[in-house]
Structure formats: C-alpha cells, structure tokens
Amino acid sequence: MSNENHEIETESEKRPSLNFIEEIIEKDIADGKNGGRVHTRFPPEPNGYLHIGHAKSICLNFGLAKKYNGKTNLRFDDTNPVKEDVEYVDSIREDIKWLGFQWDGEYYASDYFQQLYDWAVQLIKEGKAYVDDLSQEEASEYRGTPTQPAKPSPWRNRSVEENLDLFERMKNGEFPNGSKTLRAKIDLASPNMHMRDPIMYRILHQSHHRTGDKWCIYPMYDYAHGQSDSIEGITHSICTLEFEVHRPLYDWFIQTLHIHAPQQIEFARLNLSYTVMSKRKLLQLVKENYVSGWDDPRMPTICGLRRRGYTPESIRLFAEKIGVAKRDNVIDVSLLEWCVREDLNKKAQRVMVVMNPVKLIIDNYPEGHEEELDAVNNPEDESMGTRKVKFSRELYIEREDFMENPPKKFYRLSPGTEVRLRYAYFVKCTNVVKDAEGNITEIHCTYDPASRGGNSPDGRKVKSTLHWVSASHAKDVEVRVFDRLFRVPAPDDVEEGKTFLDNLNPDSLQVLPHCKAESFLEGYEQKPLSLFQFERMGYFCVDPDSAKENRLIFNRTVNLKDTWAKESAKNQ
Ligand code: ATP
Ligand code: MG
Image (cartoon, rainbow, N blue to C red; front, side):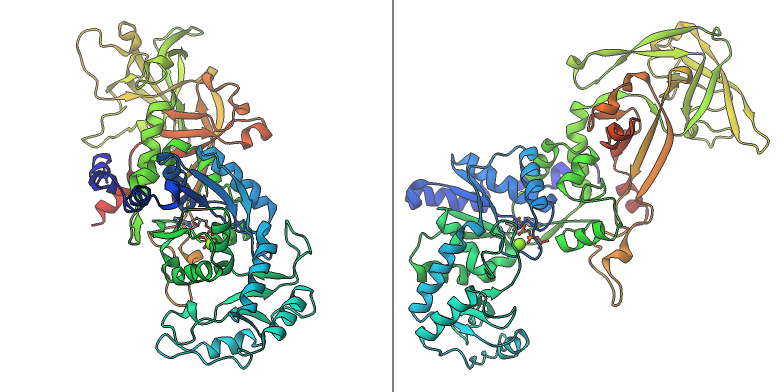
C-alpha cells in the first residue's frame, strides 16, 4: 500500500467530524447530564506491559477529556493478585507519560476493597447476594446454556443471617480457595449468561502487591469495575466490545446499590496484522525467550515500540488515523509504519551509514589528502542546518550498489558507469580487485574534481546517487534489522495442534555487526533512542544497550518504503 492510499483509506478522512462516542458525550453535555462534566478513566490491569492496543484506549480516553475540558483517571484494576505486580504498575505509569498524557487522579481498585465489601454486605442484607458452596465444575454444570435456564444452586436460598455469617468467615480466612463464592442473586433464566447469578467474590489466599495479606477474598472484575467507576465519579466508562454483554450487569449493580451511574460505552478493540496482542501471549514470548524482553523492538508493546524508535507523536497519529469504530476489524501494521515514517521524515537527522560495506578507491584522488564536505541534516527542516562530512581517497559503499555485470535497468555503479557520491563528487568505475575466491574486495574508480558538492560540471547527468563513508574516518557500528515477528497476517489463526508460536518469523532479527558510519555519530553511545535517517536505508535509533556496552548499536525502526506491500502485491 502506498502512502497516498493510506490517507485515502483511513477512517479519519471519511469520518464525520464527530465519532460516535463524541456524539454521545456532546448530547450528554447538552442535556446537562452529570452537570456537563466529562470524566473518563484508563483502567489497566497491572498484569503485563501496555501494548499498541492500550495506546488506542489511552489516546481515546485522554483525548476525550482534553476535548471536553474534562478529567481522566488512571485506575489500576488490581483485583487479581495472582498475576499482578508492581513492575507492571511502574511500566504502565512510565508508558502513559511517555505517550504524552498526564492523568488527574491515580487510583487502585484495591483502594476500594473495604467499600466493595460493605456494599456486598448490603446486597446480602437485601437478599440480593448469597454464599454458594458449589465447586467451579459444579457451578458450570448448573449454569445451563443460552437457551436453557440455569439450575438453582442448592445454596441459593440460604437465610440472610447465614449468608452474612459465611461471608464474614470467608473474609476472615476460614475457608480454603475455591470452596465458596459470593454470588449476586439475579436471574437464572436470563438469556444473558452474565446475569445468571454472577460471582462477586472468590476466595484466594494470596498476597496482594498493595494490600498484602489483609484480604483473602477478592472481587471479580464485574463486581469491582462499575463500582470503582462510580466511586470516582466517572461519567463515560469506555471499554472494548467484548464488554457489551457485561453492560446489563454493570448497570444492575449500580442501580441496585443506588450509586452514581457512569455510562459504559463500547468500542472496537485494535487488532493489528502480523502481531499478537493478548498479554498472556506476550508474556509467553518473554518468558520462553522468543524475544529479549517486553521491550524487545519486535514487540507491539509501548516500550518495544519506543526502543524500536517510534515516537509518541507517531503513535498518537496512528490512534487518530484508525479512529473509533463499533465493529471489530484488523488494521494493517503498514499503517503504523506509515505513521512513524511520516513523523521521522520531519524530525530525523540524516547521516550516512554503509551497512554492507565494500571498499571504493579513487585512484586519481591525492593520497593522504582529506576534505570536509557540506551535508544537509534534514531536507525537510532547514533549521536543522548542515554538517561537515569527511571525504578521502578510500571510501566504503554498499556492496549492493555495485554490480560487475549489471542487468539493463541497474543504474548504480558498474564498470564504466558514472554515479554521484552524495554531497561529494561524480565517480566513474574503472576496475575491481577480487580475492582468491572471486569476491570483490576493492572497487576502483576515478573522480571528477569539477563535480565537487555533487554538482554536474557540464550538464552531463548521472542516473544515481550513492551514500558512502570515508574509510579512515568510519566508525564501526552494529545495526539490528528487524522484520515482522510473525510470518502471517493473523498469527492467532492456527490449525489444530498448532499454536501462534508456530507462526513466528524465524528471520525477524538480523544483526549486522560491522556497519560503517560517518563520524557525526561519535558519542551517541550515551544518547539512547536518538533518531536518525540513514540515507537511502531507513530510519534507525540508538539502542539503549549502546551505553551499557559503550559501543554504538542501532535498531532499524522502519525502512524508507513499504517493501512488504510490494512483496504481497507480487504474490497476487
Ligand atoms: P488482555 O486481555 O490481553 O489481558 P486487557 O484488555 O484485559 O488485555 P487491560 O489491562 O484490562 O487489558 O486493558 C486496559 C484497557 O485497555 C481496557 O479498557 C481495555 O478495554 C483497553 N484495551 C486493551 N486492549 C485493547 C485493544 N487491543 N484495543 C483497544 N483497547 C484495548
Ligand atoms: Mg482486562
């Protein structure tokens, strides 16, 4: 897909000026609902690192609050101590800030454990909740099917007194894990399975990263989420589509408890091609060492994208381009790549780096002589100025830029042809030197001193311009070239007996240890995540390992053009 196509195809171009959530909000404001207040929240469960899907939700929630002069809370939905950890809390805070957002209040569902407990007691007293002794297996047998009503649990009609006593003893730790639950008493015949006496509390003898051993019963998502929204005065509780069927339950708790009623609104989650987004799967990739960590530059995590060289602006642009929809779809990852190119093209310092070097020797250039040539730092931004690049008799150019026996349309260097060296001179190839195995070790050429600066002295034209690095001034750098982590657009779609791991791309990381860079990059070891365009090669950023290892390591963010689109077009 070309850049132009993306612009035509993205939702944002076709979208009316308001998306459906903005329409709801503007109507609420007009109606004076919630006193015209807009208060959203971003509610991550601290059981993993944030990914690009979360970024969509973050941009949406913070974006709406900004647009309507409202507020956004960061709420950690920490109701499942088994999988949660402070490491995740810290990373989530860091990633949201990095994306450019600042939350108003920072809250934890666990702050509300006492309130939630008190409300549960209230529901028991009103005969709307009961302690159930069915095991998990029994409970699922009793549950029925969407067309068949559930069977009542034999414990459904316990007296209020007995329920109060048992619930308190659950809290006090008298019963083992899984032996009892607290369930809301709603409607066993409801076609919505979530309304068939959903579980409110389970017993889990497990330390919590914030409440320690204070609690051994923990609220379920459905019981905790809406009430947490309510306590915080949230007006619009935005979540992904799979929670649509939970909405009646969300509303039931709030109405039954007679507390502030936020409105739950569902939107389509982001699905991205060539990657997986479930935290469970991302965790598995990390734990089983398929990647180097959560911040491996091939991961769809925010920290992975950051280390890859993505900017907050590029991710926010992506969120804007994809818009919000009510129906699930899959976004082509090439749109994300287009967004980062768009941003980096404006920002990135240009440098010349030869990734697969071969020597180019200019026979008529004086030995031992060197000069400094002016190079443009960013043709898109004049204010970034120019720099000096060292030129001498022996250079490196890309091996791919030379062919001894070129096919017809090969316009780069070959015996007898003339090309421009960027910012430098016209050079004409005379001959090559090979080793015993026939590999080219040196390309020889002559230069035209009158073409200094790369300008034609007499109007004669050359068909291509090559980047180069002066051999004696070159700095050795390592470049890590990444390809998509998965070979197929939908890695989650697998045949029987296979898993998403079978779809991993075995060639997703290629390390080029001996690239040659111009001396401008001197010192950038200590400047992690600095962004560059390597002329003709793509966008690259300084990997944070550079500082640790005191040598320059670059990650390729993205190539200059969308080669995958070309590949798939060829195969059609
Ligand atoms: P997983 O199911 O992989 O654990 P999750 O959806 O449970 O992910 P949460 O931490 O609960 O992850 O998500 C926090 C918020 O981010 C929720 O409001 C959720 O709806 C939203 N979110 C998560 N994934 C996506 C996605 N792919 N696109 C848009 N929003 C998402
Ligand atoms: Mg969740």
